[in-house]
Every structure is written in structure tokens, then in C-alpha cells.
Image (tube, rainbow over all chains, first blue to last red; front, side, top):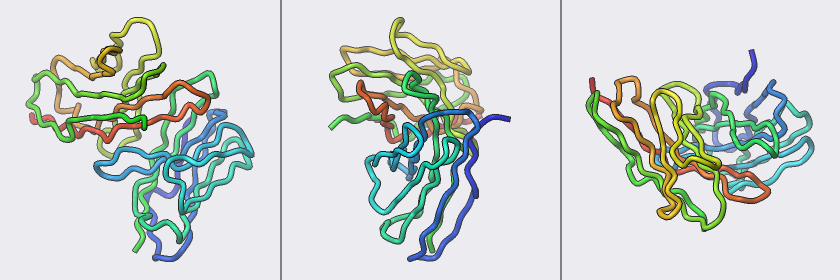
Length: 113
Length: 114
């Protein structure tokens, strides 16, 4: 069953702790993306990666970090430096440069207490 | 700065009413345009997209959208909505360039009353 998986679905952390969100895809897509979704603000791009071992900052990268050691995996770490980390985080992937359609995972809702 | 505007933040309709959700973008070059939908508790999924050719594009579930270049618009329409269309709708744009970054609007929450 092909697709994008994000785990866990719900995540709670104490303020000041780093937390890593998982994103895995078995679609053999080259590009992967992380967005955060906040009510009334739509989706905002955090980081993206167009190929393995390469990634670029999006519009709101401060307080986040990523890695892309494997094609199928693009984990996002929310660090303690992120001032407002409570949000819904969406991962997406895209086949390659010739494709313009992104496919989204189910999301992880992070709540920092 | 390039942006995408969705002016209707919250729309409430009765079943069988017609729907039109506005989407405008601010960019003078080539664009690819998308509408995504997020049903309650489900993944964000692609509704329809426009890359080139016929500016009237048809998507899933009876939705369509028209690209009007002179108005920088890509409005979403459906002639008769159903209760199952209750969802949040996002317009998105890829601007011409190497990054293929998808820029989203703020979303429109549609509630259809039975």
C-alpha cells in the first residue's frame, strides 16, 4: 500500500524539549516537504528537500531542523528554539522536478505543554 | 512578495446551493495552480490543478475551476453542493522557477447544512 506515513498522529511534549516528527514515503519520490498548518494561516513551508542529502529552508525554518539521509525518510526536529511549536505538521512528497503535484501525509498534531 | 489570497474564510451553504470560492495570486509570471481539499479527519488531497491549455479545469466530485489570467484568479466552483462537501479548501500556486515551492492560501472552511 503506497503512500506517505507520519507518526505519531498526536504528540505531546513539555516546553524546552526537542521533538522529532517522522515522515516516510514508499512512492519513490525525490522531493519531500514539511509544512505547518495553523488555523486561519493555511500551510506554511518549513523545509524542503529535492534530493537525498540536500535540503533548503522554507519560509518559517527558524527553530526547526531536518535531515535527508535516505530517499524515503525526511524527519523534522522541532527544537526548543521554536517559539510557538504547537501546530499541525504536514509532510508531503513529489515525484521529481518534472512533476508539480505534491501528495500529503495524514499529519502530526504536536502540542507543547 | 508573491502571495495567494482566499477572501472567503468561512462559507455556510445549504445543500443544492451553488458554490464559488475565490482565489487570487500576485505574480506576473508563469504559474501552476491547484485546489486542495481537507475533509474532516482526512489527508489533504488534490481536487484539481491547472498547468496549461484549457483554462476551465474539471476535478473530482464535480468541482471545476477557471483560470483567468487577466484577473490573476483561479476560482473554484460547484453547481450543487452536498453535505459531504463540508471541508476546508486551499488554493495553492507554484511560481515559475527552480524550487517548485507550493504557496498556499489561508484556506476556506465550507460548511454545508443538510
